[in-house]
Length: 155
Image (cartoon, rainbow, N blue to C red; front, side, top):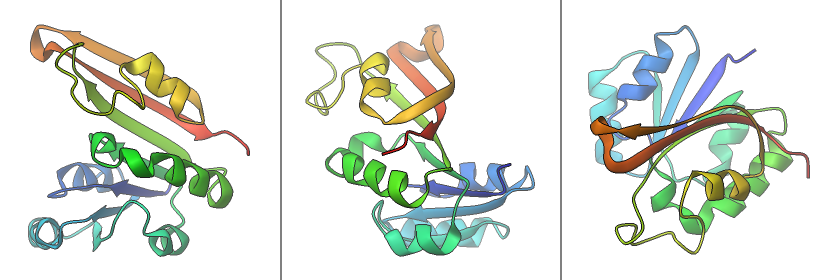
């Protein structure tokens, strides 16, 4: 059962607020103190904190059942492996919800050493995927949006 949800890279907090409306204990972290100040001023229910992806004390304190990464992986590529290893060691029964937009070849100018499309991403992240989707079409132009929920694979 998912009771505590931590969104890393929550920005101004809208998605974290929507999570709190489901009845879960919702927490949001972001590297930007300004974003966190605005999130706190806008939404009362979630617990917002300044913190980087690898602010391990936050994970240890909150003990999230679900960690949400929505559109932040391109910004933390150099920390993804460390993050995954940390979660596999300290939160082995937790889940990861991952949302990310991909751009077509030639437009994708960063992150290509890590992954270039949804199948590459799924192979890169050490999770057992429970649910997944990839969206294409007129609303996304030439981009695709990907989504998966999975549980960390054992070390």
